[in-house]
Image 1 (cartoon, helix red, strand yellow):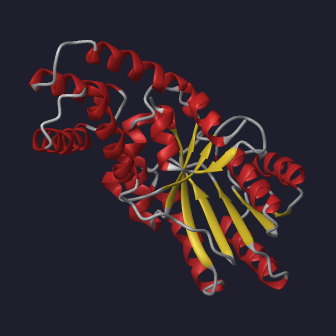
Image 2 (image 1 turned 45 degrees about the vertical axis):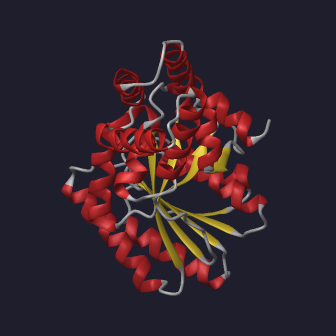
Length: 298
């Protein structure tokens, strides 16, 4: 199954919701204010934010009026192009070695799984990979990560439960540098963005990486559960304020009809989607492709 097929599969619920509403809308008589108002409602119901939806609709209307368009299929093409342009608004992120990737986010979004999949992906691409088990807070977190590291056949650096997370990062950096590792992936404890002490711990790890490995390309990726929808925006903003966010890993798209949230979130915060989970298997993670994502929504 190719990436396009996988995306169509995981976006099934989002597509079903949009497709039926669009079919009903296009079955009506003609373009006009009522048409565009209903189109707004369809996008908002798919969890594209109100502000971004209004911008998209205005752009479509402007072109449609200028071109004297009366063909609804043409308008659908305009809609797809606007969604694509919106998703592409943030500069794309290229992971360059030597890379340090710190994976962050709240509890339960799929960080451990995403790290295992990324490690496997990079390894299959011929890159050497080390994982730093810096989630020393959650019971058995390093054990679970070790299982993924074994499956991906990559090295893992870990300390005992309750150890200083920054000490794990320090040791992992030392190891990665000594072995000329291409990619170091740092797991971090799931933390609510409102927990000051845990955010301070994240800042400390950030400082350790910058101090100990200044020559590395340092990326901070946030894992988002797609079913969170627009509520994810406050999470991203808080983490961005604390340590900066370079990109998004999107998970659990198959469980929601509101996959559209990522369009407005990426656009409004100017943070690109970098990877998307497409299933439960170790190879079910892909580089994000905006065109295929939009096509899979319809």
